Image (cartoon, rainbow, N blue to C red; front, side):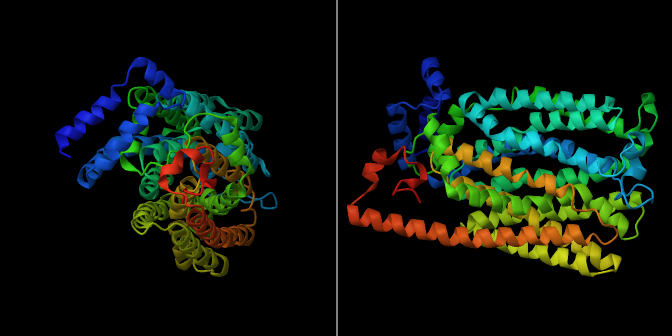
Length: 504
């Protein structure tokens, strides 16, 4: 198939009539569309496939990564603006409070900082499944920019908070408005790319979190120069500037996001058709909620996410307790995030190359455990800092691999979207735990020990999942052989999701 003929066929699908486009937005695909797409898949040249994938990478990944970088920067900047000590200590505020002074200005004594950090995750966690359902029912090119405008407004107005109570309320609403982005874009990527190609794309997307961690440290280092400008404190300026940046990108995204019907066409051209249902139906939501494998993935993800949030929120504090000044702690918090960014992308690439998920999760968690053991046991600043770097290098890559694993084992578009939202949503409740475990400076044995426990939880569940998925695949293969089930009967099982004997 030549490039010209492919482009003509591709354009003929993308220029679907207005009525047909409306039906696609509701998730129902016409029979002739399936037949035409399948014919193109059969004729699809591997070189053309690679070219289309590269084009998608350049057009899609930088933009969605920018969105997530802003999101992660906004949610964790409270850790860059003012860390308070455990209530039994009367020493000056730790780490970043010396830079920005939010803890003093808002009188964040006792556990108030921890509460302000934790309340974000309450509405954030429970709003993710409804948001992904809305993403499927409406146009992502409108839904994602709308929620960006909402959280950008909240972020900008956070510069007006003047008390602990107003900070808590603002963080609650920030969690609500940000809830749809990460699960939405993760699900969105799953519609553009085949399962064997998703890990490295989600890794590139998630690496924006590590960039946000590094950039946040540099940003916090610079905001002390803005103290007093316009009558605002430095920490108020950071809320304001980040919010305005989010609003500008949100306006731009109205013109850059593509609609799901085109994404699904491209997806159909790249992956083997399984003919599973793509339309909305309540039973697909119930399939996701009743599936025990969903909850195995939820707790695997939670065990990995607790260390991720702890690193983002408390790395400057941990480094400060190693004997470095608060300003130097901000700068020294940058290298672990940069190293985490590089390894996240590399692990995602090799996970797709070898089509393996579980071993990379287990390996990354073990590396992170070594880092936390070094932090737990050592008293020398240099070795402890190396442990901090190992902790980030190990755990950050596991997030993208685990999400690709969870999504690729959920059959059917709608169930996949709900499963991804449940894994991310419920798993993010671990962020509440992350906010309260670093309470015993200077050695933080409670925090480091808790994170080691969560990492071992993820390792155990990953081992179980590897065994269980292999068992289920062998069972389905035996069923197909015994009952003579072939690909010609795919339509008979299209509503069964990953329970279909033809789904692997």
